[in-house]
Image 1 (cartoon, rainbow, N blue to C red):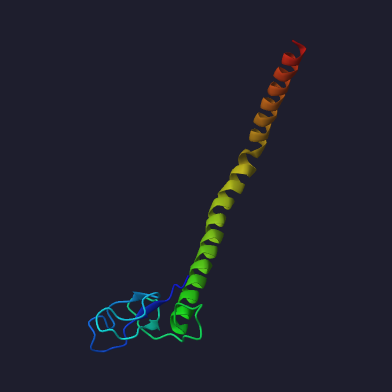
Image 2 (cartoon, rainbow, N blue to C red; image 1 turned 180 degrees about the vertical axis):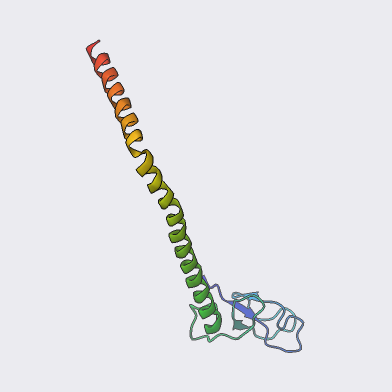
Length: 123
């Protein structure tokens, strides 16, 4: 499936630099001129090399998109790191302060549950 877009190269056509067509359309419906492959970016009509059929975007737009993706990934990583610091630090303080009490409560509940299980087995 070809995802590239085509546009009319005729400067006097109504669709010139205003409309992009699917790659299946070969001729302009307005003037009949043969359509050329153009960059898929919105509002950008730079012609593409037909030697690179796997690319839908021109080299400039492709690098901009890759840079934007890398920036988003970097921001997400930094955000995750800072969020983990804000979540982990208070959690460690709570565990240090209330850890022994919580451990005692859990141990008591475990003993109670084990005792009930033993009673049920004997009956």
